[in-house]
Image (cartoon, rainbow, N blue to C red; front, top):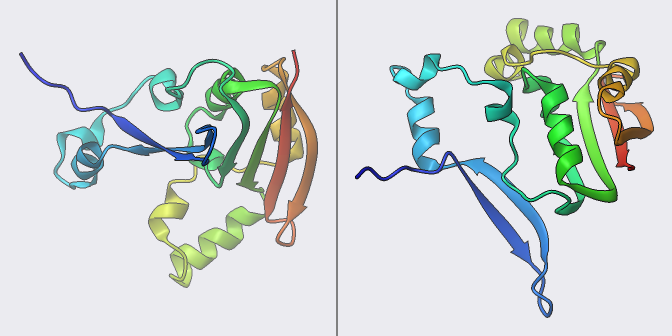
Length: 167
């Protein structure tokens, strides 16, 4: 009988009296992180279906707020992640998201690949950049999630969005 190692671990921050979870953080398990970081790892060439990379191991309607800062641009399937966020949000719950705008792409690439003052690996991992219209188009495929507020910050280089779940 073989023992499997969980792909991801989660940790909770608890309040005092009632013991309710204030926050939950998901991270790759230490075992899988070490395996994936090895240059000669057989895992380095694996690909996964969209649901494997975006599945959140929580019950439906588990959270009032989901915060995702500078993550969306690293995902092959941002639509699937936003659909999954909608699933785990309670009705009237909010997703707070930041992602770089199209204007940031040349600046970040210059800082990373020419000046070497930003992580090259981090910028090379960006799958796409977003503007308000891009986010609205993604949300058109997720009827329960609506863009409540959007603004650009850092001289237009980043998006700040609040998405609200309605049923």
